[in-house]
Length: 215
Image (cartoon, rainbow, N blue to C red; front, side, top):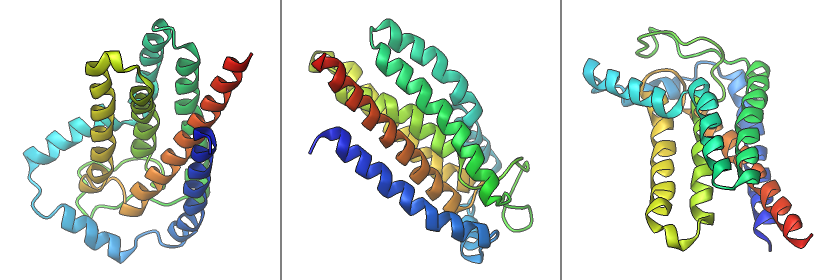
């Protein structure tokens, strides 16, 4: 089976799993299991550690920041003569933001509140799914994909493109729960939504690249 078809199947699976999770989140706005889980995450939290995690989480996962950062990243990729990749990356990140905003409004789940868990500064907007997680998957996931597609002769750059994005994506989700900005299911939904969107984007990209090579 072609890689584009495998990615399409992976995308459909993730987006289909997101449907029952969205219905559940719409009914369970403040689930007690997730309150306990968040409190467990925050159990040994200190002000210094929290501040460090908050700054790092903003730099590596902020939805607004990443949707701005993707522009210079795509310009750099374009100058490497990877023009289709640059356009696909930009389209993935920005369409993801639009679709995610629509999903947030449909589910309409409020953010974790002070009193239930530790919240230093109440975040605005809806909670489900996590925008930080979905955005980080789209941008860092594309860089990870470019690392997989990179030629072996640039081994140093390839290792960075494979290692760093994976670490950033893995860090973003737990950090959102630790900071009290999202419930665990918001984070899970962010991974499913971002992963599904990224997989769909890569599937379309590989299909387009195959067609361009045949012409």
